[in-house]
Amino acid sequence: MRTIRVNLDKNSYDIIFDNTLDELRKFMSNYKKVVLVTDQNVDKHYGQLFTSAITAKLVLPSGESTKSQESLFWLYDQFINLGVTRDDLIVAFGGGVIGDLTGYASATFMRGVPYIQVPTTLLAQVDSSVGGKTAIDMPQAKNIVGAFYQPKAVFINTNLLATLPKRVYNDGMAEVIKYGVIRDIELFNMLGQKDLDHEEIVYRCCDIKRLIVERDQFDTGERMLLNFGHTLGHVVEQFYNYKRYTHGEAVAIGMYTMAKIGVQMGITSPGTPELIKAMLSKYKLPHHFTINPNIALNIFSLDKKSQGDMINIIIPKAIGQSTIMKVNKIALFQYLKNL
Ligand code: NAD
Ligand code: GLY
Image (cartoon, rainbow, N blue to C red; front, top):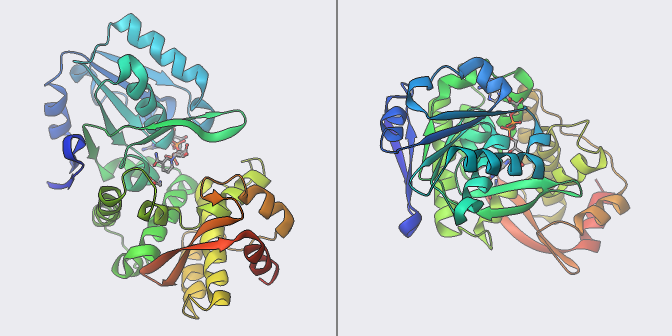
């Protein structure tokens, strides 16, 4: 069993790779009450795994629309009915939707009850379960209400990925490719192999995220690297009202496009966009998208990384190396026009 320690002073915790779930059951046994929050799809596949170890199971509909005010208040109601206190444990068992929602409910109920993340999608295992970003969506914007609230532990079982629909799996693979491009050429090359060692891949991603979160827990500097491809990805998602492309597909387009822009800027080594494109294609992820640069500029202005006329963008120098650049939005507009 492998473990990664995330060192955040009194908020430190372990990411435990536990394919037997024994460690997870042991951890749960330390608490008086254990309330598991999950969604219908995960419940269908894995709902029976913890029956004897939990006090109650709360099952929500699957999908992004569950990350809502309604679900949040429903969870508060259930916690009150169950008599949850700060001595109890909440378990987020699902993908990023369940992880973000349950994390935020745990952060705010009684001003903070302990919770753990048990991620079941590739995206959640490599990204959303680690680092303490929790949130719900509002009708006007995604992730607009949230908190930094670290879990007490993260338990990862890569066997759970076997039941993921192909498109959901590939969606997570976009985030894995992101880690390879920003920090780890060996990881990037592993993704080109025929048989993938999922535990090793998830481990490497979590270790990169650990390092970045330890250095910049509250997302004011280096943590922005994790947003490689996301600024333009959000433009793509929003342009299609979150209907045409999944998050990972939009990020894939964003990563390729930022590498092309990096070449124009003279920062990205030539050939890098093509390497990214080939890897994206292997996982059926798109790379090309045409958007009116004026529309992109408007949407960019709402981005959290936008500051007045300037915006922070993440540019790969080569596979495995990347940098954060502050650029003028008009300059970015020109780069987009020249693509
Ligand atoms: P998701 O949670 O909606 O899961 C995708 C689909 O897979 C759902 O239908 C779910 O029911 C199903 N599913 C989950 N596990 C399964 C399994 N093992 N087998 C079969 N089906 C399974 O989506 P996601 O991609 O995991 O997460 C996306 C969310 O994560 C977004 O809301 C995004 O904003 C958030 N996110 C948060 C962070 C963060 O740092 N907190 C980072 C990235 C993304
Ligand atoms: N998913 C980006 C972050 O955690 O910062």
